[in-house]
Length: 434
Image 1 (tube, helix red, strand yellow):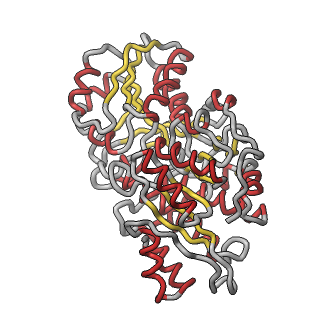
Image 2: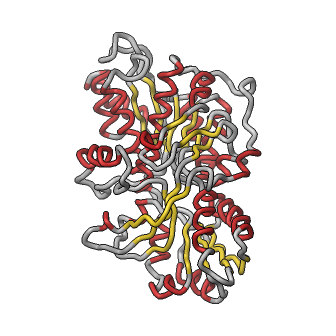
Image 3: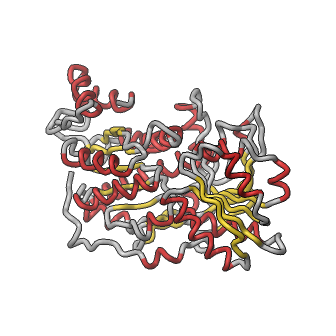
């Protein structure tokens, strides 16, 4: 159990029961968590609102998951500091769903049927998000996808109970490919694709944008999800003449890949990466990176950014990620959106909360971005600013390595396929009021 949750439970239940609750939540057998009516700082016999943070804490997305949880924590602390939501304290429970979709589905079911979680936030892996959100839809549990960027999350795998808060690879690729192809004459593009749902979905959207911007697909190299031998993939890439190399490679695979790319190669060809998270840049400050897309950066000159960074550094400034990135920013606003929706609905009833989430609108100032953001009620995907960035290796000051080159508004990067999304009706979505 995470230390923040232990402290919260200590306040709610007292020290005597903390060890018992810890065992119930994270014990090998995953026994049910019996949090019924209890005394709390928020009033007698008022149960807390339980939110499960589900993200892989081991493997290639471990650092992303940590950054994601921090964003959720920051939002929850804001609400708890002023009395919680509806007079109820919010308790965050962390659970590792792994990167296996089938196991993740089992975890989601246990969290709902045994641990009685009210809501779920997190994911990181798009395959895990798709699996867990399908289980949540079955039970009527709201699933807040904080940081998965597969285009399929808001089209084929969209659900009435799921809301997606990260920009997708389709949004990023639309901005990046237009930027990269504008300066190339022959406009031949090679796709370098990770062999998973996110990689193939992202590459598929790239093909349509390449055609839209006057380019041609020169070929595609598909690499294993584990990417055991980046050098082999790079040899395949070198054998295919191309002006632009469009990568859809995620997590630590990016670090391993770019550690073996000659910087001269990046100068000759225009390499673009659908998305590069801070957690893939900051741990490898000496590794060069090409063009990539993000949704926020700690050094943007937007209202509220400096204050948010100061809050983050006061709490996490002594850790490996001592500056916040786009993952933390997305999780913070996603969790804040959920809690605000519950507050405005005046109830935890999922139907009422969903209707509030479908009407989310933020000003640019509120989002710390350059454009207003809004939730698309058709796809349940947040439409927001996308930034085009690059990385200048700075080993001594890695926080200064990221450089913003441009930006695109939500309308400029909209993924048109989202208009075809089909959500379950409210009649087909079970009521759930934790």
